[in-house]
Image (cartoon, rainbow, N blue to C red):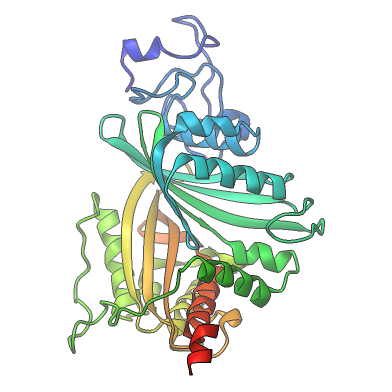
Length: 395
């Protein structure tokens, strides 16, 4: 809880000491996004309800921080807040590129705002961990919608509408984000805009190849070392609660040990699955089909969780956020129609999942990964296989 000194740093719009104000639906607790209207997520003059040392006085807790500053930068177009909310040496990871400095974050943000001027991003969840001393970690699920009304990186503007999901995981200390992972379902947007997916991916891969980038196959993926089977037990070192340890265990059993029957044990019969390409599916059988389709395309992949955190949910139960990577080879047919027949190329899939547990069972799952990144990686590897003009002349 905030100390008396901390509460004295709130914005000038705060009510006088001793005055009562309605804090519904938060009731003096760290915000929970699910049942709150937008105005309740960016309140004016709310006293801090957790340690926020070093943060701007307008932020009352870490959820308020990530929702408010995201809205100001992307929806109110206050792009300059990036200078006070990101470190100069920010490292920002996406499935298609990595950014290594604040100026590139500014330029990339302006470019996307110019291409999609009608886009609005709505906070769907925020799962968080940490404190203001060691730093906070947030996993922020956003549902974005808009129309493509300005010529930009998707080509000529078509005016077509789109809706997609994005998850941004941020490491934050004293008001500044110093590491960020962003997974956006670009394939969903491209399909909704009616673009040629294959041509778009090829153009993207050609630009990367021109910069000297190409995929390299480094051998075994780590799922099996030599002729040994996958590890019997999951690595639980990143977990801090029993529920987080339970989550890492069944993820390892399902994706690495291929014990797909765990889905019937850990998911409620009425589970809702919210996935890439804006899929909205129902029931354990649907979850099973999606998992099998993913693993079938990359059957030798190792599923490696990178971070996990959890928070209580005002809908009841607990939300758990997992950031993960799958690395393997495109060896099979699966759920990715755009990839076509197996190519054998090495691929890496960065994904983020939010699980809502009630009474020990998962009642909702939100998973975001980008099929486009897989297609670009395969295209890039295929382009790198082709001999250059100089090599052809030498031959």
